Length: 219
Picture 1 (cartoon, helix red, strand yellow):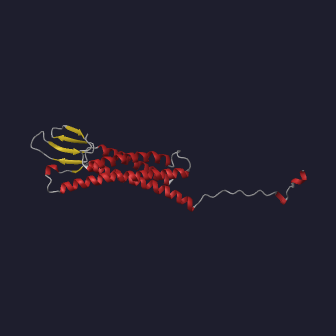
Picture 2 (cartoon, rainbow, N blue to C red):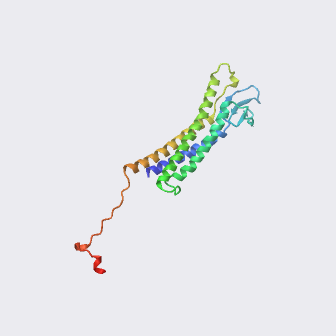
Picture 3 (cartoon, rainbow, N blue to C red):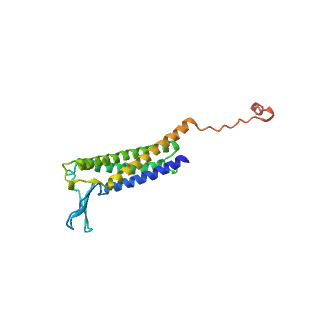
């Protein structure tokens, strides 16, 4: 029962991690700059994401521009795109696999097969968390190094946006879900090795009064 509850908890964490990874991938707030100009039409906030750049004006208008050219993007943006897409795919695949391997479902066959399937789902979640941590860490490093560079003008400096923090949290949730699924599988296998199921033995039927019947008497 405890293992089933842990798997349900891990499934909920993985689902939240998948939703967070998708939101971070599509969000335009990976880099945020706040510049206040003297003109009323001057942009007060500029947001840069993996797929689009958005500008929020002081008049309340909000405009976005898609990044069509892939080769014109910096290396860390291209790597972040690829890694985040792979993280979403692995997390979605892990959701499907772990659904089959969970004990509370009737899919996946016997207990041994479901244990291996659950372990495979946990591995997918761990890989998804790794692919999610790579772009967020690299992106944060680029933003911080650019911010601390004295040669960069103040108007060109940025700070980490909300998508970076969402990516970190999503990676942590996926990592926790993967570890729980893998450890629950190992715990189940260890219980089977230490305490193997006992076979029920039936006592042999003995003839009453110690008397037996010889089949040769009836031939």
